[in-house]
Length: 227
Image (cartoon, rainbow, N blue to C red; front, side, top):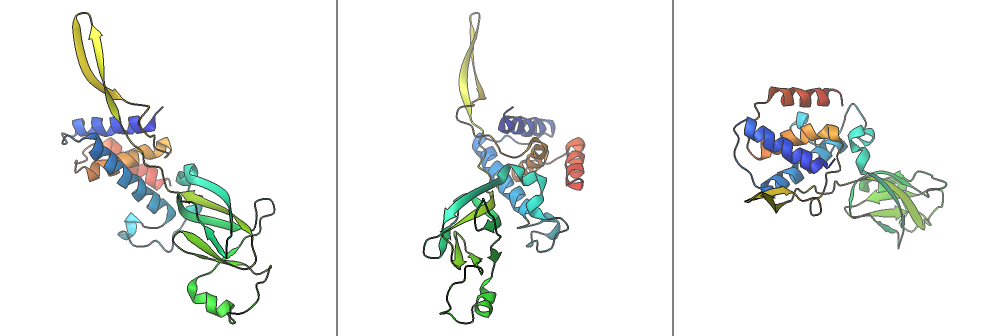
């Protein structure tokens, strides 16, 4: 099953059912991308709708173990060059940094305020048993002796994309042109099927289509309650 097609058909059906406006594929894809990133940020705790989009500092459940994030878990071993490790381009959130995959020893995260406290002397010699990392936007600064590090992280969702193509259907002497789903040029969404209802609701909101389907609204609320 192609989830992006299922999602597009669901939004289209609900649009017709709720007397919503017409939308193009480009509009759908833009709304889909915004919805995917919005849901991802909520799952990892970057924002929380219930807190009016404020940074989610304290949360009752560890975001890193949220089942909704399962499709985005990745790991990689990266070399440390001159005390710096370049993060993967698709990294959305780091969940762990270790000395190696085979014999993992967790490397402690440090913030800028604590660097001066731990490293009182800027000329101190590196210690093999004392390794820290400072997270920057696209890299990690490694404090200590380390040639490479094993990283576990949550990747940013690949942008889903719905594309259709024009096909010609001939029946007897009648020829009709219509648009059908183009599997070769579409990009499927990576989210689990159970998140499609949530994504559909977000897309409809961004397309400024009023939601009057009580069953869908109730289903989404049940899913959120069970998270």
